[in-house]
Image 1 (spheres, rainbow, N blue to C red):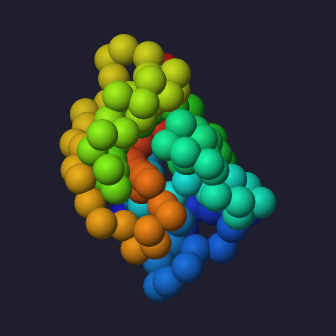
Image 2: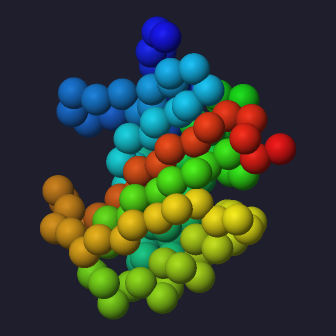
Image 3: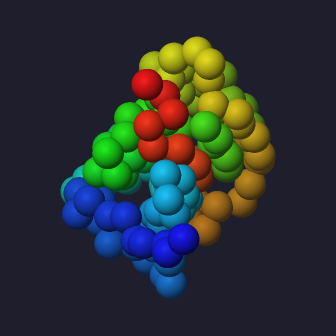
Length: 128
């Protein structure tokens, strides 16, 4: 099965040697996204950065023909684990049960102003 880069043009260009998302068959692998909006502005606080990151994931999944219901797995990297509750409050606004499988890890992110990075896997069409 060939792999194909999946990109929608809404997100700022990736920094570094990576693709925003790769599709293989019906599976979409979304690279780690940080809390910037579509104009590359960093959100203020964990809630805004979480929302920006999830909107980025949503835009890539939708560009591949899917929806957030197709997201089956999320890995969350939080710069500060004390943000866990506030992160969850925004996160649950984007998903309906059954929620994606998820791991949440405390992590030193590349830039100190980044509070969150999310990576996701979606199987397009499975959430119908």
